[in-house]
Length: 325
Image (cartoon, rainbow, N blue to C red; front, side, top):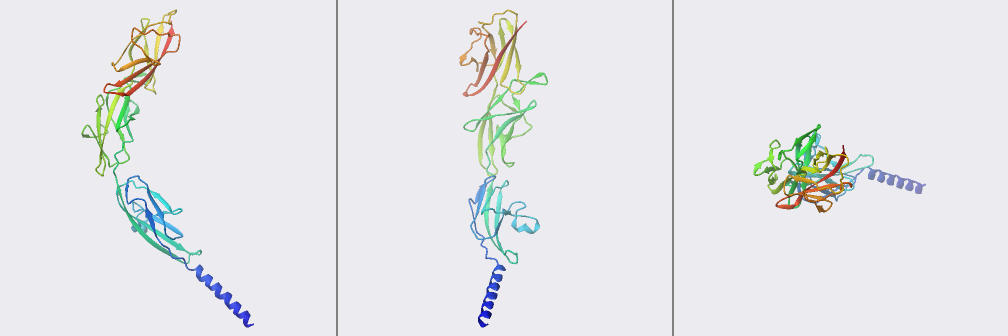
């Protein structure tokens, strides 16, 4: 009987101990590492939790995520698998707070521990992502990014619009795409204006100043897509038909008298500048001296280059369409 009582007493003590253990949460430890203490805007901050917790929440310190304002609807981010990646869009100094929590299964005991880290975010954004002429009648035309912070804008001389042909000026508005509203842009030493028109007939000097104070210089060049100014075949002047959606593609329409022999005709043509060269495949064509067999499909390739920068080119394709009457 005494043995049974001792066994029953032991079982009760064990159950009581288990019950006590279930009602007591383990002690949390808030600890984290951050990859960098100075970040650029939109640069990833990587937080690794290295402590002990059942749940980890990180307050990043920016708008609506300030730990000191947690009673005023500011919230943190739950860390998943001990890793959190975050980026800031506004420069400043932020207090990053890590809250480590432990709790029992029945939530009768909840414990917290915190640690903090200060990060500085700077806006040193000087990268131009895109440059465009936003109002080529109804279209936005983008420049090509080249090496050494140089850009090349290719523009049509004329454009097909509502069944008419509109001339395109080299005095155009510009648009700069930069991942910061605080970055300032200067064009030819004057502060950029989205409503101003800039002379693109000469190279444009662009300077970008970040909020952090870093300056970066760019240069924008502009070239027209080449095209025939005049084209005459067998005494008949052709008509250049424009593509409404592709400014580098044309059709040259020529109506010849019925029975015209087109096997060996010598076209006469002019272009808008000496820098515009005319080719069929890789053979250069000269006005009045290059015979062409027009019984085959003929495509002229016109190449225009900038005089001081022959590597900067605009290329057009002009197909010849001959009909008879």
